[in-house]
Length: 400
Image (tube, rainbow, N blue to C red; front, side, top):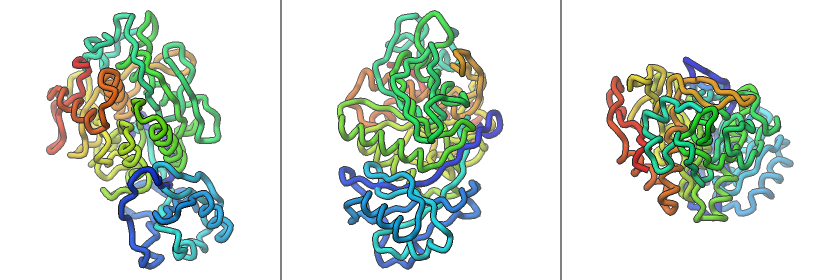
C-alpha cells in the first residue's frame, strides 16, 4: 500500500532448485564471470541490502547443501538459507572482493542482489459482500459456512485472533511467529475470518490459515526468507500432491524489468508443483510488469478498486493483471482481537485467495491454471476507470 498504507519490506532474492521439477535451460557454462553477476539496475527502484546476494547453482550440481557449504568455506561467505525444492541455490553475504571469484566457480550459474521491497499493505465487509461471497456455497455471513482448505499467508505473521482458524505458524525471519505489525492478520481475515456472531467474516470462512512469517515486525524481510517459505510449501505439495494449497503474497518489489529473478522462478516451479499463488499488483500506480513477484505470468496478479467500483488510483496496472478485487477501506481482523480498516492491493489480493480456496473446496483436483481460468471466467466486468490494457474484471465468489 505505497500511497495509503506503505510498509517497508526487505526482500532478498535467493535461488534454489529441485530435482523433482523441471529446471529448464538457464545460462551457458561458458559465460564470462561478469555475465553471471546480475547486479542492481538503476531502473529497479528498489535498493539493495548491503553485501547480500542470491547464488544460483547450475542444474548439474546434485548435492546443493554440500556445494553451498563448500562455496561458503572457499570464498568466506556468510551462508544463509539453502534451497532444494523450488530452486537450486542459497542466500549469502558476500564480501565485495569475492564476487568475481565466486562467479568464476564452475558450480555457479548466476549471482543476484538482495533488493528492498514494500508490502502491498462480525460485520459483512463491503468487499466480501461486493464479490458475493455471501452467496457462495458457504454463504459467508449466515453463521454456518466453513471451508476446509489450507491457505498459506506469506506476510508479517498472523496473530491468534479469536476470529481466525490459525492451524500453523512458522517463522522465517528469526523474530518469532507473532504478528507485531498487523498486516498479515488483516490479510488472513479477509481470506478466512470465521462465520460466527463476532468481528468480520472472510471470503472462505474458517479455511485453515498457515502463517508463514516472511516479513519482520517492522514490515521488512529478506527475499531469502520468502523463497525459503516458497521452498517449504513446494516440498509439502510434492509430498502430498492431492492436498489443495493456496498461497497469498501481498508484497513485492520494483525490479524494473519483466525478466524473472530467483523468487519468480521459485514461484513458477511451486505453481508447476500444483500450488495456487495470488499476488498483489503493487501500489505505485505503475506498470505491474516491472514488479516482482507481481509480474509472474503463471500466478494470479490482483489490482484494486473501491466501493464505487472505481479502479484505485494507487493500484499498479497493465496486461499482467488477471483480476481486480475490493482494496479500498477494507475492514478485517487486527492485532489484540480487534478489527481495523486498511487499503491497498494487499487487501484486494486475499479476496481472490479466498475465492480460489472456495473453488478448490469444490474442485480439489484443479490445477493452478484451471483455478485461474475459472476465477477469470466467473468474474464480473464492473470495474470502471481502468487504464488501457488493464482488465476490468472483478473476482466474483458467488459462483462457488
